[in-house]
Image 1: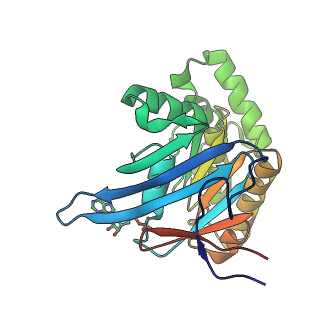
Image 2 (image 1 turned 90 degrees about the vertical axis):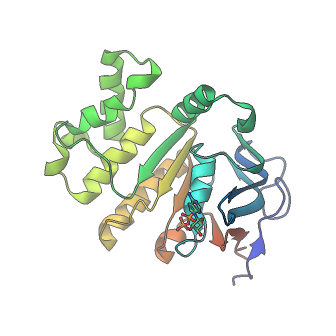
Length: 247
Ligand code: ADP
């Protein structure tokens, strides 16, 4: 049986996991974002939210509801105009731009609907390039890229160009690229939006495996069957986030 949606409760209480669980990766404290306009648009209303390490959360809502705004806030691509956002316990509102960028590169892996791969570079190089800016030596970048591609089931496609890969394989490369820097949070924006149902299912299976291995995963989706794969599903409507309690 499913209860009606409830506004997302204050961090550490109500629908959020209890205080003795793993530490929060994402913690929003009355965080929201209003575009100044004119007229001002309250794209994401003030919200308290706690997502703990190892959780698998899906986020749904109609177009224009505020999903991208939420993703941009938790992905450190945008700053809340009010309230605060703690990533792995770090209050991101106090950081200088360079430190925010460094924290984002270190802690967050992004996966998008369109895979954004470099078409003239083999799969392993697409993954290795993600490690260019964090000081990983070239030889180690190649080793890590190959290890990560193996982890996502592409050991046999290391040398393939993206143009020679299927949609599902391309998304696996993109997931490997997001994972290569060992982030604490995997943020996926419509990761199955360009895939047929069976391939989407296998990509969600992979995200499920990563979750079972301890990764914190947030997936934004329009697809109810994808949303149902989350341990928790958050809904955003008119900028207001709520959570459906599964009883
Ligand atoms: P979704 O991702 O769910 O489609 P968005 O987060 O992109 O929704 O947008 C939420 C609301 O904020 C929408 O009403 C949108 O028109 C508005 N919005 C998005 N970006 C801007 C911006 N740069 N300036 C003003 N309003 C914006």
